[in-house]
Image 1 (cartoon, rainbow, N blue to C red):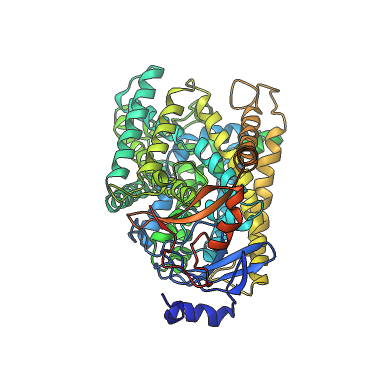
Image 2 (cartoon, rainbow, N blue to C red):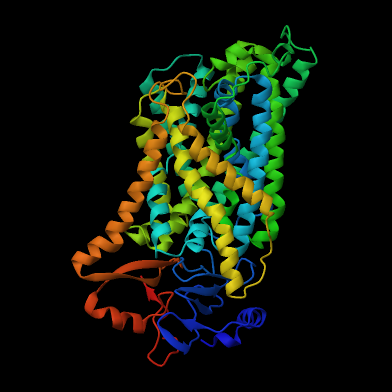
Length: 594
C-alpha cells in the first residue's frame, strides 16, 4: 500500500509538516493501521502520536499510539444524524430526574426559590461541561466512547493506566437500576396499588430486559425508537409546563397556586453537605447532554453536527425543566413534595386532573423513563465497546464484536447483568439515593481529570505542531467545570445538619464517598497487579497488537511476551502494534486477523 498516493495523507502531511517515526526505530517509516485512512507516527520524548482518519467526514488528527486504533469504516454504521443527536441527548437527560429528584433537591436546598435556582445553575454547569466535551471531541472526531478516549490521550503515562482504571470503574458501575426502579414505581402508580419490594424489583427487571432486547435487535431500529420516545418526552414536558402555567393563572381546581412562591427563599439551607447533595442530584438530572459524544464515529461530519445539535438539546431541556418545576410548585404544597420521594409528577397530575386521570397520565412518565433506559444503553454500550477496543479487558473480542446482529452484544449483556444485579441485591428505600450518589462520586473524579486533561492535550498538540482543532472551549467554562467537580468531591464530606445519619439515606452520610474511593483504589490495585506484579513473577512483559475481527472491527489486544522475546517483538512491531517488515516498510500483514 502506498500511503503517499492517498490524498488524505498528502493533506495531513502538508498541513502538519510531520515526520513519521516509530518508538522502536530511528529510521523514517510509513505505516497504515487496519481501518485507518492515514497514519503518521511522531515522537515527543517517551510518548508517540499517530495521525489517523475515519470515514465519517472528519479531518485527520493525532492520538497517542496506545489508544485504540481508529476504525476507518464504523461497523455500527452511520445512522446518527442531527436530530438523532438531539433526541439521544434529550432521552438521556429526561429520564426520571425531573420526575423523581425535585423532592430531594427541595429538601437539600431548603426553599422553593433556591430549588428553582439550582435547576438554572445545573444548566450553566452543564453548558460549561458541554463546551469541554466539544473541544475534546474535536481532537478525536473519529472515536466513539467520549471519556474513554479523552482520558487515554490526556494521560498516556503510566502506560495503559487510565484506560484500565476507567475500564474497571465503568464495568463496576455499569448499571441503570435507579431509572428502572422509578419506571416500576410509576407503573404501579398507574395501577393504583402499593407493590411489595419484590414486585417492584420484578417489574424493574422486566422493563430493563425489554429495553435491552430492543437495543440488541438492530442499531437503526434502536435509534428510531429512541428518537420517537425522545419526541414524546419533549411533548410530555411541554404538556406539564403548559398545565403549570394554566394553574398559575388560576384556571384549575388548585386553591392557591402562588402559595409556594410567597417568601420563596425562606428556609434556604447554607449547609455545605446539603449544597453538594443538591448539586449531585442536579448533575444526575442533566446527565446526558454529552451522550452524543459516545457515538462520534457513527456521525457524518461529527464536529459541525454536534456543535449545533448538542447545545439545542441542552437548552430545550433546561427551559422545560425549570417550567416543570414551577408547575409542580404551583400545584402541589411544598410539604407534599418533600414527602413524595420519587413520585412528585404523580402528585402534580392528581392535583390538576384528579386521581383517576393521574393514573393514566403517569404513563407519560413511564414512557420517558423507558426512553432513558434506551438512550443510556446506546451511549454506554459504545463506551464499553471502546474500552474493549483498548485491549484492557479480558476476552477482548467479546466486548468489540458486532456479531451477530450488527450491535455491540457484549456491552449490552454486561449492562443488563449489572443492572439486574443492582435491582435485586440492594434493599428498597435508601437504595435509590445511594446508587445515584455512588455513580456520581467516582465519575466526578474522572470528569475532573478529563477537564484538566484538556490542557494537557492542548500542550501535546502544540509540541507536535498539530495546530488548533475545529472547536475551542472558553477557558472560563473549563475552569467552572473543574471547580464544580472539585466541589462535588470535597463538600460531600461536610456533615449534614442532622449529624452522621442526617443525609438523604438512613445510614452514615459519607458512605457513598467511601465506597466511591474504594472503587477507585480497586482500579489502581487491579492495574498494578495486572501490568506489573503478574508480569514480574510470570517472566513476561505486556505489549499491544492491532487485531481486526471478521466484522471489520479493529482493536488493540494486550498480549504477554516472554522476557527473552521482548526485544524481537519490539523490533517487529511499531508503536501502534502493527507488524512491520525488517526493511522498515510496512509488512503485508497489517496487524492480525482474528
